[in-house]
Structures are given as C-alpha cells and as structure tokens.
Image 1 (cartoon, protein in one colour):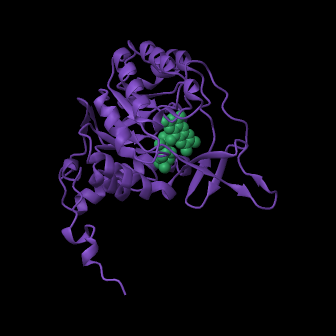
Image 2 (spheres, rainbow, N blue to C red; image 1 turned 180 degrees about the vertical axis):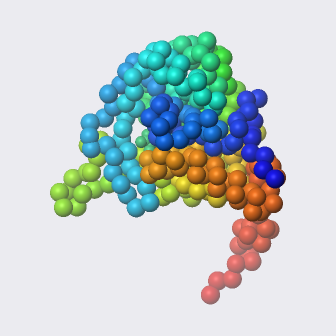
Image 3 (cartoon, helix red, strand yellow; image 1 turned 135 degrees about the vertical axis):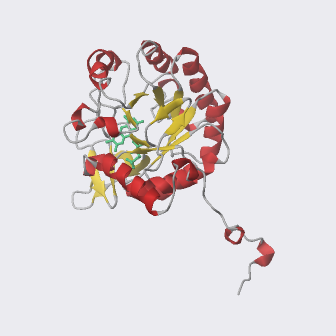
Length: 318
Ligand SMILES: Cc1cc2nc3c(=O)[nH]c(=O)nc-3n(C[C@H](O)[C@H](O)[C@H](O)COP(=O)(O)O)c2cc1C
C-alpha cells in the first residue's frame, strides 16, 4: 500500500514534507525542465528584497569538504518583478509556494508583506539572517527581542502564515525560537547557513571575495538536527527542518527530531532531481519499515534513559 505522505502546516496541506529550500531552486522555473514541480511538497523561492539586488562580487561559491560556502548576497530581481513575472508562471503548478523575504529594516519586511497581501502564495518565510541596518549590521536573528519585534510587526501586515527562518549563528537557538512563538509566528524554518570561511594557502588569500560566507550541505547536518531537536522541545508551532539533507533517510532523521516538513537546499545544486529522489527514498523507507503515515515519524525520536547525562557521582574517574 502507498504510504500517506501529506502533512499540514498552519492549516495548509502539503502533498509530502519535502520543500525545495530558498536560494537553491531559483523560482522553480530553472528546474522545471528536469523535474515535475507538481511532485514537490513546496517551493521556497529565491530570497527576495524590496528592490532588485546584484548580490556580492565573485568568487562567491567555494567547495569545502562535504559542503559549500556561499556569499551570493541575495541577488534577486526584487519583489515587484517576482509578483508580476515569476509568480503567475509558478502558479500553474500544484505545489505550495513559500515566499522568502529579506530586509535591512523591519519596515522593509513589512512593506514586502503588504505587497504580498493579495498574492495567492501559501506562506511568507522571513529570512532573519540579514544584517539589520538600524542595529549596526548585526543579523536580525541573533537577538530574541529583535526577533520578537520583527515577527510581531510582519504578522500585523501579513495575510499568509508567517514562517520565521532562523540563523544557527547564535549561542542559544531555543530563546530565539521561543521569541518567534511568543510574537505570534506561525512556524519556524531552521537552519540557515553556518557562518564560515575558506582560505587559499598558496595565494594567502580568502577564497571568497566577501571573505566569509555561509556553509551548507552535509557538513552542517548534525548541527541542524541538534537545533531542530532543541527547538521542537520548547515550541509547539510547526518546524521546517533543513541543513544537509541529501537522502530520504536524512528526512526521516529530521522528522524524528521534531520537524513537520523539511527543506532540501545544497543537494539541488549537486543534482537537479534531488528533491524528487529524496521523496521517492522517503516513500521506500516507509514501505520497507511498515510505516503507513508520515506522522508516525514526526517527533518520534526514542531516547533511552541510559543515554541521559550521568550525575557527577556516577562518573568514575581514574
Ligand atoms: C547558494 C545558496 C543560496 C541561499 N539563499 C538563501 C536565501 O535567499 N534565503 C534563505 O532564507 N536561505 C538561503 N539559503 C539557505 C538555504 O535555504 C538552507 O537554509 C541552507 O543552505 C541549509 O540547507 P542545505 O544544507 O540543504 O543547503 C541559501 C543557501 C545556498 C547554498
């Protein structure tokens, strides 16, 4: 029997839990000749800004062991172009549309939410890894009080459910996630890329023109799993987990950690059919393991008491 793969996020049903992650799947159009977009649970479109953006100068991608570093810098044609030219094309497909929005002030995020008010998109995704101009360039997503303000402000302008996408570059992801929930955020996407750097030893120079960039791909999967698991234990809003997913079994791991759906990013750059392959592998895993409904996996991590931290008195020192 075919297993049941559909999940619901904020009352919106997705045919399966696999979403193409923002910035790695363009506006869908770029992949349409390789894959049937109708098969995806959703597409998070390339990060949009209020005005068109050229992004950072090259080189802006560097391969690293088990991952890539990027400093693309949100190159995009702007929100108006998206609404006018890309969205009508994407609406032909039966997949959920998640619009990833990026600002340098809270007002910019709110203006974008306003512009999308009448657009037939399913979710807004606030990328709060962006530098906050009013707070000296520190990312919005690193301070709980700022995360609270931005979530609450955008909620007041948005018609669609608001997912807040968290940066992992913080000391305590839990307090950030709690701020999102307290402010009325409808869901949490995590993780965005991990801040990193590559150096060319021969040339004694940074590999990226921007010097630092965001690490993604399998190298960050353990960090992402840990953060999804931590966040799932402190909030009750749904989580879209991502970071290094390349197989159906990776999806199972994120669902067990507490994610309701997942994002697939860098894997799309390795193979344009990655999302479809991953959906098929998830289905095969479920058939093979006698799992009829994907909900049997969500939050299903089993932690044996023996794996819990031992009390200091029970640790023997030699
Ligand atoms: C080239 C590239 C561009 C990205 N652009 C965006 C973006 O515009 N907005 C965003 O929220 N995340 C962006 N991301 C982050 C991904 O959506 C994802 O959160 C991250 O890469 C972790 O998943 P992965 O390891 O499967 O790639 C980008 C990632 C990459 C590799």
